[in-house]
Image (tube, rainbow, N blue to C red; front, side, top):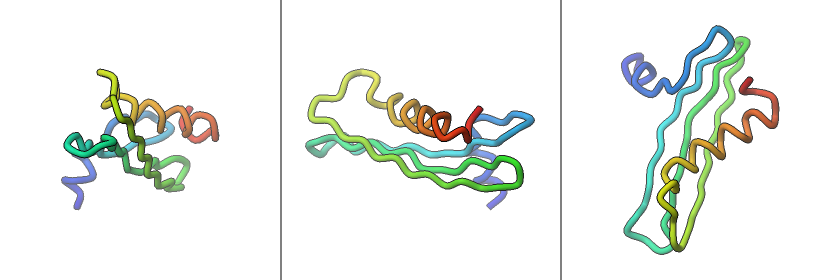
Length: 80
């Protein structure tokens, strides 16, 4: 379990640790992308699961999963 937790670290600062894993269903219409994980901050753990879909994904569809999630975490003042 500890090995997996270290593998999925996306960002680690003095204030928080962000862990996550993304996936992408490309062979279905609409295509589906997801990003799941959790944020550890101030001895609290916040879990998240994001799902996006598109009929004609742009080249940045893969990046969008994490960008959207980070923007939401920043908006609710969890990711600073």
